[in-house]
Image: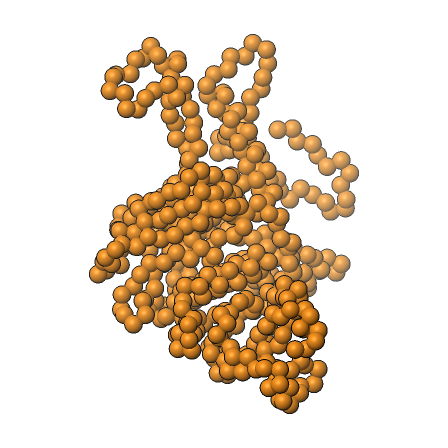
Length: 473
């Protein structure tokens, strides 16, 4: 590597570091190596493979220009056994996956050309531990029942992938689609009973074929120890688990932070820091397809497995969202002030709406009793979303006009509320259908509703035809 000094340095300017770190050999990054062609050079199979790896890695770097996630397809569903087992087990369940295309966090792409049906108990269960740079092993110990993996340096962090024994049922895990590769011979029939002819090796046509494999990545231990997730028999368990993942994603999202450091010399106390988003543990393995966990069935003590897609699946191939400012100004030198939590991204906010709609679609909402039972399975709901029609009884126009008018507010159409807690002040107003998207987007960045709060204000929007809205009907 040719090193060129700074030609005209500014006062006090100096080299703080290089990325990647300069070293005489690049054995841990073979993809950076490429062929040096010259006339008469012999092209070996190893040299051509090295060139293929270099070109594939450069294509993966271009894949980082878009967001990581599912571009199309890859919907999954869980097939349960006809006769449920007395104890919770993965055996007897099957995962159905549709064709599709996705991008990994490192830019690699995965294509599934046909539908798949995979036994759930044949999918290996892993646990990913992530440590800081220049650390041989993560500080976190392998979980009970898992075999420690080999630490792998990823350039910035050290990642260790542990594997559980067969038959392990995770408390919660993410179904991940991981890239794979296998070698085959184009001119050899694997079912041919004849012995291989060594003289035909030159015509074997060895090939490297891209493939994919399903894995389960158990959720980190710090999520399992959250107070809201200690009672797994609570009917709100699934909703709390999804909220914990959304909150963790928003906290570690990319953010822009303004800092005032009074310990620095005058004139250098104000600065701005851009912090990139952290990856979830399962994103080091592949593309998340669904959240796998279990919940207690209504009116019984038995538990059943479920797949929740919207909790972990994000749209891929799109533009990266803009870095948003952090919620507070850093004025101290402690870690809490210098690294405030993020506020989330539009992708995170949209996922909360999709997950809420997906969860509601699984619960009956036929009458008031069913809606009350449905509401008992939620503690957190997104600040904007869609509700079943029977969750609120609306007043007619004459009934709404008969109420005492509120200053600067349209007539309230809320009648009897069947979904939100009694302390919540629920208001219903009509909105033109063409203004609905703008109203939902304006509320997407707010904090979610917590049904355990003592008081909240909820506004329910009833979409109406623009002509009827102008006529105030």
